[in-house]
Length: 156
Image (cartoon, rainbow, N blue to C red):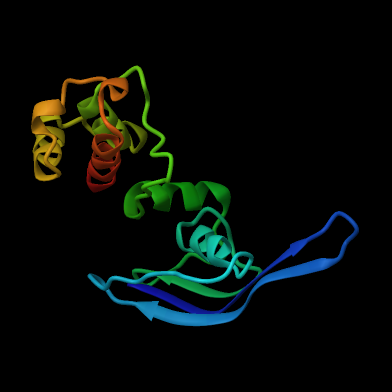
């Protein structure tokens, strides 16, 4: 579950002028709920998603992720929680081109110090319809297939 209460994010210009990106944002998202973030350019969507993804911290307010207040976490603590609880599918996918689809899916396990589970990675690739492409290099995959690998990596 995600809970935001009174979240604000203010950036500072080089001259010291404050630039508010988020002002007093409060909402919650229950497990399994699907949410879309929409808004005009410059409305704070990226700032909000960076906070939700533990890439940034709020200037004010409280952010609870599964009941844990992560608002004031250090970079290292946020990195740890990203590895354990958060997955990203970036617009550019960020796949490693010199590795196969299945090796790209296994990468999260390497970062958390866990055991690489090839069978699980292959199963997840199968669930996104890419079992037959598991041994192919990223450069051999279509854009849609690369997106599928990125989604499978998040599910790992």
